[in-house]
Length: 122
Length: 293
Image 1: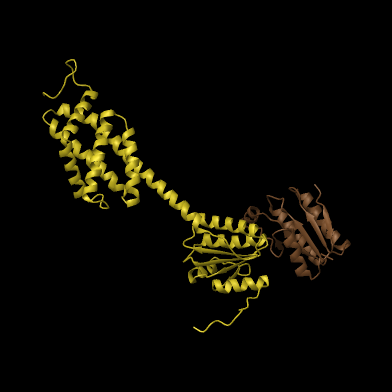
Image 2 (image 1 turned 45 degrees about the horizontal axis):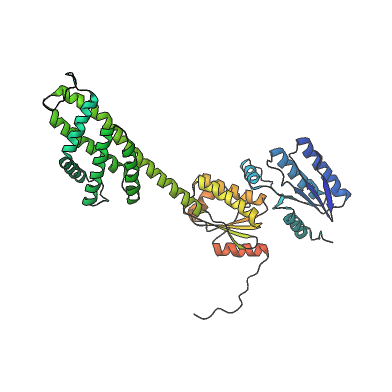
């Protein structure tokens, strides 16, 4: 299942709507990194509110997205990790080292506004 | 053997024997009860109760005891055991006291039967055969009832402590405080994490101050759990500041090799709240100079 990527001002927003296979995950990664260049995006938000499980491949890929996007000039925030998912993740050692996280989309946008110094509400 | 009622000329049945035992116990009620109460005093059981209370209790137990033997049902006794437990558990009566008391009664009654039938050892055997299973069943019923009641009280108290023990408080918009007091066991640690993560979602918190001034020491597994909690909170987009670490806890954290870049710590709660306010962009300004003391 493909993940829709929306452009919102200087940011890209990808909302994961159901569990993703490893192939879907890699496709999302490639699409996001390509679109950062196309749209000259300054920030990427990946919303995982709908996920009730996150395995090591998914966490690793999200981390890759964040690092690759940073090399292409955009800051990444993962938003909407559920409390149970968060605790299961840290138990497995998946702490998304070096990746910004926020409670939800709103908090993620606020975080990007602050860290990139631009505003999404233009 | 004038007191043995022989049924159709043969040996008495065990039911007939029990009837005899019951009438013996009923006839000698006052003497045996006093003997029993005296033995309870000697054995220093039920020290939480006065002599009069013990005697009153002894009377009640004696009568339900005889009733249980006579009717061969434990229903009255079960109800009594429940009632006894409800009255004595809150007064700190111990299991060994209740069990010891019932076993003493069993002993007192067996001795009186022994004295009564000692001239005929065969009959004595049969009387004891009939009496002892009933007496054992009674002891088990009372002891089990008592233990059940105690466990119920303990469960209720644990529940109450657990509910009281982990408040998540909102101090300002987006700032939560989680004061932890008392020992943290693995069960409580799990509960703390759950409450904290749910609290972060519910209050949309960005910063959480966990104050562990009231915790004397934690073991390595709880310390690890604390670190996991801090990281899980970060995945929800909240920063955690831990305050009030005792020297012992600091030592435990260093020993298990906690990565201190992942966990911010501040000396006391006041410092922790100041740090949190700073992170959230608040400045607290006094509106007037404090009045001279």
